[in-house]
Length: 640
Image (cartoon, rainbow, N blue to C red; front, top):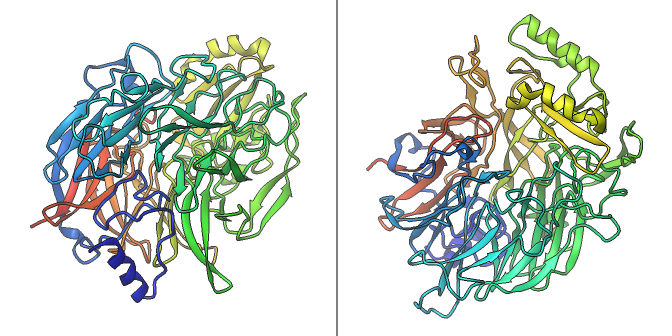
């Protein structure tokens, strides 16, 4: 069915049309990381539905070989990619920035490209969440008239011929642009591109991933747009205003979404550096920890909405801003749904940034660190939070009474005055922790039901500032903690930092579920349902520690897919290597399918040339999380 016919059918059913974020993909395609420019992660395909999902079976599996040859970097590798389907070919990237073009019906490789990332060097992150596609619009079949854009973990933007995988010689130098050339690169491997580029017209737009706790004067968090043909810089936007000294970051490391019709891109930004000490960056830090709307053609700032003032908790806006549509006073209002690590969600007018549900500035605790001026208030939406918001000693959890007592004692020693309690030398509870709430996976949008489906974590962390004169000795004496915690030097500030999840041994102090799947009615601003996501089975337990019981609701890293078949597909769960399928109306679990490795990625779906609907997930695990490693791209379809 052509796209225009699909829209007409939606209107005939009385359902709202999808948001006008750009040209609608053909119903069976998945040409952009989030399905469409607005990142809906919604497919109008309904071949697979509640009545036949029991017949879903593996159609093909492709192994990328990305973990060969063996490397120390494999312990960091995270296969978080979402493939895209363009011109009848499936394109997927690996943690080491390789690209494979696959036959979407058989999984057979058509071509591959290896940027030859130096595996002997160190990288803050070892992941690539996907690639982007561009066509020149003339109908030409000449070389590089269709292109695949790849960002690499060693900070290159590469243009490949979509048909052959050959680098496009006219783009930059030999088919690539060095992204570190004008950002005052400090440390190799700490300035990277881990999320897919965003293509709007003849521009390819990129943010960056920055290792931001090593020092206060890290690289610029600039967002840049390059010409899709030549690779020349067309515009640059800086998230931090002049006058902040040399502090850096505020970078957009997650996916940037777009409203092509309105010539807007929506940029999710993170914290200025470093995350946990802001004495060298006084004030609210303007466009950091925000969603900022830029004019796509020029980079001009149109509006910004900040979700955290003067961030001290690593509360980046990690989730892609998702474009939706709601009704207000009898008219359709284009909107942006913003999900946060705090478990807050904000719904903003797409053209102005004005909140569509009220937001209150509420007083929050003050810092006890000399030279640190924490914000006196923080924005709280009146809509219900996606997660729990506080963990008190009496809430402590454990497998045994002695675990619970350990957690109670630990919680009673830390500063814990609710969300936005500033870090200090005593140690502070951060809940939800830096993993989320909602992380890079973000949400999916069901336009007919006006439901936002989102996976959220609720796991408490502890952060402690360490006076500079004590940092090195504490770091050396705490070397054994590096398996479960992190020391960071925050060079140039008076304090180093240590953070870890709150736990008794390997067992979290936070009561489960640690991960949930939530449906939110964005028309009403109300939660429709919440269910635990995933299961820690007693034989597997947590980080190799067996449990005497099954625990419902694991930590999650990835996003859902929603289809017109009334189903939600999601893997994402740590230590639960399965694809989970839920009923979108009720949250009822209708199917689970074993995967060959951890599915810390986001699924997609398409219709193959054989007429079948395929659901595809990358199953390769998450090295830092310690989930099952692998290199599989797995496609499912209904049994014939």
